[in-house]
Length: 345
Image (cartoon, rainbow, N blue to C red; front, side):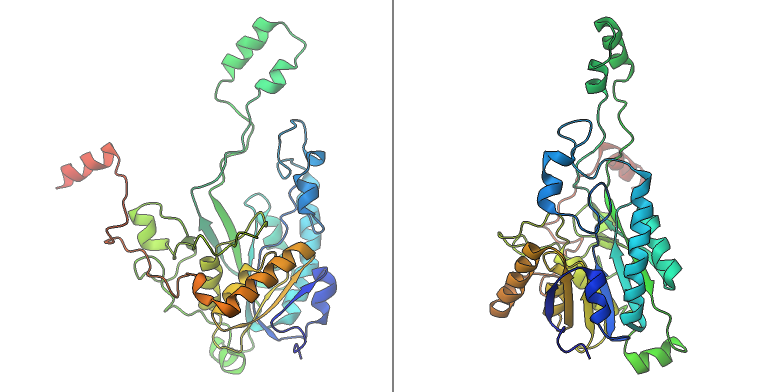
């Protein structure tokens, strides 16, 4: 029933496109929706958000850092509607994975839970490379109508104290599931969905966990949680999308949750198409939707390039996983750790 949508990328508002997808026909929804952080809402425009028009208080403050209690309320209302459509199109037992920001993750999960999904787990995508967002108060102190000595003393008093924005080193991903029909076995035999493929290993042949990392961090973390590092070429030089997710991460989730080549993977906020590329590489069918026409053209180009050369996407199915014993893996050991090792030995 979804013939005209299969393996297509559709331009439009997800709330208007999703009703055209038939009931109970999608195996997995994997998506990275707008996070509703200061102008980054359902209709956000990358060029407008990047402009200084949306910067607040301090000229260089990036959009997305302003706090407003209405952000979460609006996110909940909007994602409740989105989740209602996703619940309808998913097969019984089908999975729904959705990225979010740590700050508004609770609003997203409440919307998904309240519409009728089972919240099975919360995945954490762990990484170390990110910019601290906390700001010094010196800029505000300089504007005080007080003498210079008072300002200097205040700066000394608040040395090291900044605005309450900690460095964020993870993204939460909700793992939700549509209620199965009957038992898990009965549901799987009928719909070929609803179970997890635990042969999909991470790290050093470890059982799949709810923590994943695409960056080498240290021996313990890599041993337990690492999936293949993303290839530098996978994004594409033409890709201007600000928040491209690692192809290996999307591939990992698709392999974990979909069973057959007939499985349909839906991304209603496909952006530059990483979920769709991963689905195609794994031989799954896909449906992509995005409101940004420029991103859709990028996604289409990435899909078209795959038709000619799949090997450029050097993801986990084609790349040896990093092992602890691999000589290429070099880890720094602190002086304290070395001393502890000497004492134990």
